[in-house]
Image 1 (cartoon, one colour):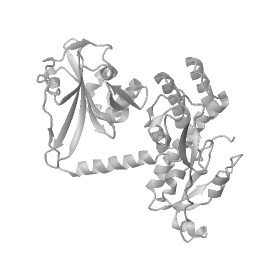
Image 2 (cartoon, one colour):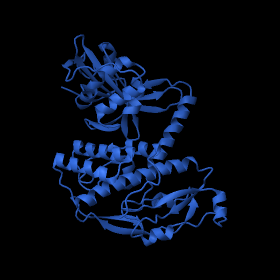
Image 3 (cartoon, one colour):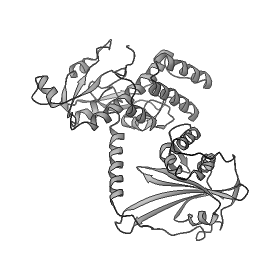
Image 4 (tube, helix red, strand yellow):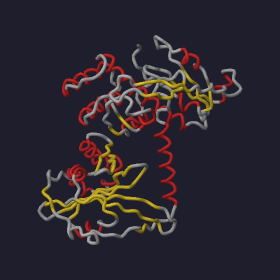
Length: 411
């Protein structure tokens, strides 16, 4: 098998795509399927948080620093030895699969975003088969030179890589390029022949039947990066609408307070599990501090059944506006693991009728003068995303945040 080759050095879109992923523990390669890989980093059979995190950092180094397969294998060997990880397949095969699949799919996702951004100037895409492959797939060879509209649905299931070890790529083409190729317009998309294939015969969860296009390996019948790019477009549109609209006047739909349901009148102070940290100035330094705390750019925490995502860049940018909050960052992980209360709040804009849902995590710590911390999150596409984090001596302020529906309350 030929060594993996980018076709260019790692680029910003590729790196950003990978670093947005959430670590996921798995028993089998079937646990994360097709476009779910746009959002999840996994190594089949790696089912411990620390093990997955170490693999993620090794792959991140390979993508971000352009490391070779042999450099990755040194990291792979170190991780296996550290955890005594028992994996399927031989060492050379398994390390190559992890390395090449992550590099190629992240590269493809970055290319998807790049090609979408220049689609008005380069409205056609050409399927390009790599001559470096030692054992070409006949179907991939047949697609070589195929030129379709960038918006043709065929790409949704055939944007390469289209299988294990596939080195096919896509090249943007302009109208002038098509004329130079002797084409008056794009080609006709080949018919998509969906076939039922049985996979996972040796997986812990047992075999299952899946549908995949002919010529595409099971699990590869999607366009890497497409799901993430569409989400990004939605976010950009929402932000544009919000910035153009008049300031919203959000009003709570549920006004139940802690006192109404018999909760303690004041938030109790717990011993702080860690000391406060140093004051940090600036967005970059704050984001770096959060990244080091999380052990990743982005993590999702299960807070009593509530998925809460912390994005170091997003939360860091907000906290950096008030550096006085940064000493409280070491308490963030304890707050997520053991909050005193979690409150859900649904609010409505009085002018437009729009709704939004927020969750607030609250806890008090005995830090001499008594301080509390608050993490406020917004609900976005299936999970709550950390929006702001603060520490305060004003316990009356924190008590005012105890309104809405109590999701969780410590005894």
